[in-house]
Length: 496
Image (cartoon, rainbow, N blue to C red; front, side, top):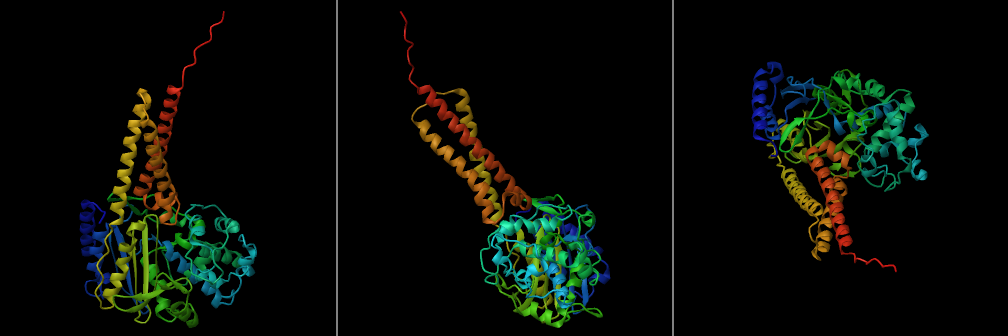
C-alpha cells in the first residue's frame, strides 16, 4: 500500500504491544473487533501512532492508542494531534455560541461586525452573511483560499493580515449560490470574532470551546504547539518524521490541535441535544440546524461548519468532519440518531492516502453500530505517480547528460541538430510546465503545498523542473553553437 515491509512490521508489533499494555479501563465496553480493526488499519496504513475515543450519549465508552508519537513516546488518548480541517467545526462552534448568546446573528452581514472586510467587488462583500461563511457559500473560490493557506505566519495580527489579503479577490459566485470549500470562510469568521470580542482568536477558542468542554489538551497558539509532538509523512514507499509546522494565520481552518479525548467532548453536545454534562452548551435549535440544514456539498450537505451525509455501510445519517495538516490526520464522526460517535487520530498524512486514513473512523463507527466495515481502500495513485515522475526525471537527466557532452565536445552538427533541439527543448519546457503548474493544479494547490504535503512527489517535481529547464537551455546552446559554426567565412580584403 505504498509502505515498506519494515513499517508494516513496526506498526503491527507496536499495535500488539500497546494493545496488550492498555489499561483495562480503556478496553471496557468496546464493541467486538473495533480495536482489532483499528490495529489492522494502522498496520496497513503505516501510521506510526493511532488513538481513538468512542462516545455514546454523554460518555466516553472506550478509548485507546497504539504505536508512538514523533518523539518515540507511546501514543495515548491524550496525545495532541493537529486537527486539520476539523478546526472548521471548532471555529463554527465558537461562532454558534456567540449566535446563541445574541452577540451576532446568523444572517447578519459580516461587515456589520468586521467593517474593514474587503473584496475586489465590495457590493458582493457587503452581502456576505455569517451563515454564508459557516456554510462555505460566500462566493470566494477554493483556489483563492488555498493559495493563501499554510503560510506559517505566527506574528501578531496574522489572521487580520490573511483576511486583508482578500481585498483583490474577485468572487466566483453570488453569496449563497453554491458551496465552495475554502479556508477563506473560516479565517474571515476568526477575524470577525476578534473584532467583536477584542480578544485574539486563540483566546476566543479557549473561552467559547476549550474551557467549557474541558478540552484540556487543546492547542490554539504557537507557544502551546511546542508541546505537540511532530507527525510523520510518506516518502518514497516509507514513512519518516515530518517537520513540525504551525500557522497562527490558519488556526480557524486547520491549525488548531488537541487529543481524541478533546474531540470526544466536542462530539457530546451533538449527541445530547446541545448539552455537555450539566450545561446547555448549544441551544437545541442550533443543534437541529447543523444536523438537518445546509447547502448541497460533495458528501450530502454542509450545515453550519459540519458535513452531513449517510454512512452507507449502516444506512445511518452522520454529522462529521475530517482534516489534516503536515504529519497528522484527524476524523470526528457522530451519528446523532443513534447516540454514537467516534474520534480517530493518526500521526501521518498525505493527500493521496486520505481515503484510507478516513476509513479508520468510518470503519470503526460502522462496527460500533453493528455493521461490517467496507474494505480499506488501496492507494494505486501514489506508486503510479512516483514511477511516472521518476521515469520522466531519469529521461530528462539522460538527455541533459548527452546534450552536455555534445556541447562540450563540439561534435559536428547536421540538420538533425534542429530536430533534436526542437524535440528535447520542447520536452524539457513541457516537463517543467507540467511539474510546476499542472501537477499542483490537479490538487488546486501551489507547488509549495505539494512539497509540504507530498514531499516525495514535490521533490521529484522540483527535479523535473530543474532538469527540464537545464535541458532546454543546453539544447538551445547547442543550436546557437551550430549556427555560429555554419556562418560563412568572409575573406579579408587585401589592401594595395
